Length: 74
Image 1 (cartoon, rainbow, N blue to C red):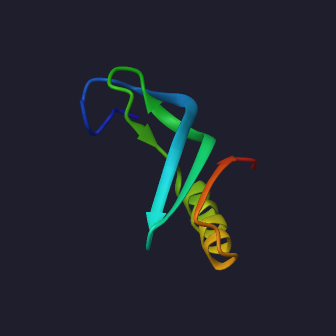
Image 2: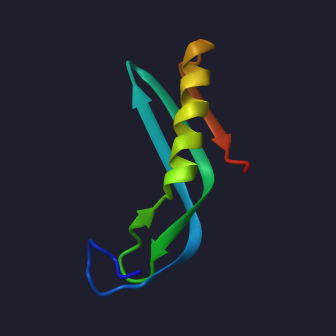
């Protein structure tokens, strides 16, 4: 797909780091599959992976996690 940010680059499969913050809690997910713009580097995470990240984040916050860094595993 053409990047909606720079409008010139094409996205290709790559990896991203996603940081989620809420109520003073911070979760970082590394090695998340994403489409990455070859021109500007903008990262696009798919809906299914986003939903999984949000679920994992909710579970971590419920367990009392304040700060956590995880490597994403499908």
